[in-house]
Image: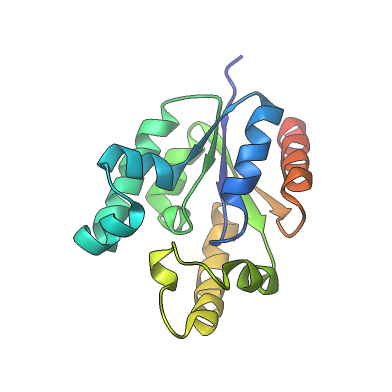
Length: 170
């Protein structure tokens, strides 16, 4: 039987990549970070893509990557923070996978993102307020996209085990 993909979604800093790296071997699946996949395909960092081509071009690349990866099976995919805000990407991933929301409290996200220097959207002086506003705007879309919601504020090993348990139970 082919394994459906597990797509991890959630706000930046929710632990998608960290949890995904723990979940994949537990589930005997391959891990792919969508941002890393796009960077590899494009031969440049996500920050460089944003700077040179803009957010809209990057979002189109996300959709193309989603299409390519959803044709495969047995993957744990850490989606970017903005990927599943697009209904088209939700439809693409749902064809061959379950979307799992890592619901991480805002206070934990603020702490995790406090010193972030990698995410293009966070390189601003009003970071804390920006994160809070963006979180409030994005969470309803994440909840609508999710087939399953797990608490993401725990250690990655515990979150990964919980996801595997719940996905296996259907």
